[in-house]
Amino acid sequence: MLAFWLCVPVLAVLGSWLQWDEATAAILREMAQTVLPDYVGTSVGLCLLVALGVVLVGLSSAAAVTLFEFPGRRLFEWALLLPLAMPAYVVAYAYTDFLQFSGPLQTWLRAAFGLEGRVLPEVRSLGGAAWVFTFSLYPYVYLLARTALSERGAQLMEAARLLGAPLPRRIREVALPLARPAVAAGVALALMETLADFGVSSYFGIQTFTAGIYKAWLAMDNRIAAAQLATVLLAFVVLLLQLEHRAQRRMRFAAGRGARAGSAEAQPVRLAGGRRVAAWAVCGLPVLLGFVLPVLFMLRPLTADWSVLPWDRFVAWSFNSVRLGALTAALAVLLALALAFSLRRSPRGLTRGVVQLTGLGYAIPGAVIVVGLLLPVGWLQALAPQTRVGYLVTATVLGLVWAYLVRFCAVALQSVQSGYARIPPSLDDSARMLGAGGWRLMWGVHWPLLRRSTAAAALLVFVDVMKELPATMVLRPFDTDTLAVVAYQLARDERLGEAALPSLALVLVGLVPVILLSRTLRASPR
Image 1 (tube, rainbow, N blue to C red):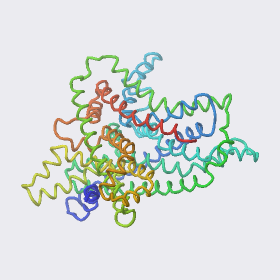
Image 2 (cartoon, rainbow, N blue to C red):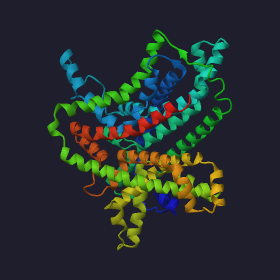
Image 3 (cartoon, rainbow, N blue to C red):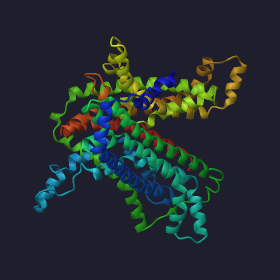
Image 4 (cartoon, rainbow, N blue to C red):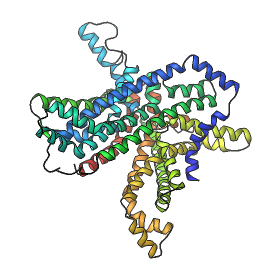
């Protein structure tokens, strides 16, 4: 039953093809002849640019900190994770405020050199969006590639050196093939985030598939057409998810036997001279462009005029965000514990398939979840007009928390399952022999050993809810604006100075799991 409620949006979107009428067919035919090719072309072009960007930035930085030794390498190991704390739409606001025609950079260039008109290319473009996504999402590739290279990279590079291979050939024929499965998995994750985005594409005016879903739904007032468009986006996401799973399996094979052999003898290659400067540039530019400069760009309007900042309303926005995040985190942890415990007791058959099905929620874009939630609500309202389901879903936090759970329960489930993997099955057998079964086994034996995993799960869900934009914008009740929604609305109204305050608050919240992740990576053996 838990899995059913978490899968309702996907089932409703797929079931939209059973509800076919002439009005929906006319809208889809019109969109296919006019705007749909642009949606497909723009989405594909954006994905290609982002894939190329995250591979170049993520793989080069991972290779630099893993295979080479240079001053500052330890600092860059964790600093390269900092862009994970920056929501992509916040980075978009920051660069737009600084680089647009009326921004300080172009204004200074025109005054200093006597130029007229536009000095720099338009920020709000396909290239600008690719730039934002690249430096916001490259840590996915960096993390996985760094893990893959740290397993056997130094050892194999040392073996190739002893066989007489020069450094460029070692990188080309040893390091790059070793990291290829990790890079594929990281690219798939980055592209899923790109396809699920609404803030950057909407703010930059880019006609992606997500924007098309919202237009078919809100502008054309046809939920069925929006749902059927969402199935196309869902198909892309499933394809990327299969690519990620396949790459993960290859990563496990690549890091198999002998991964730690000779780790004490093999050392990273020490760099000097120009190569050391190149390593600094490879590691420093992503941190500068993905975190340092956006934060400085947002601090500039804050320090310029404090009087315009809505301090009184900021408290209410923060309270709404924290309340929704805490409520969703608590419910997600409870659901994850129930599902993981069921899988622990019945690791095969139907239970395993059901748990895997609920784990797909994180890969589903927020726009698809919103459409999938409101479709069955509309069907129920048509069958029983007196029912209060529509009011509960759209006018209270119930619908919003439901959408959050569908989207982020997979995050909590993955963390709890990783905790269960460290609990030996012999403890369960001993508890059963002593008469502890069912929920007593769960709360008496498993829970004390799962506290750290559940705390990490709650933290990750809390931060993800704080940053979620598409579902919050549509399903939030009246007078329940969150930091993410307010930052988007203020930026859309060109009030970027006021948007800097909630945006920086989201960055500060996002720093917490990044710090914990960097500490975990430093504690793990190389």
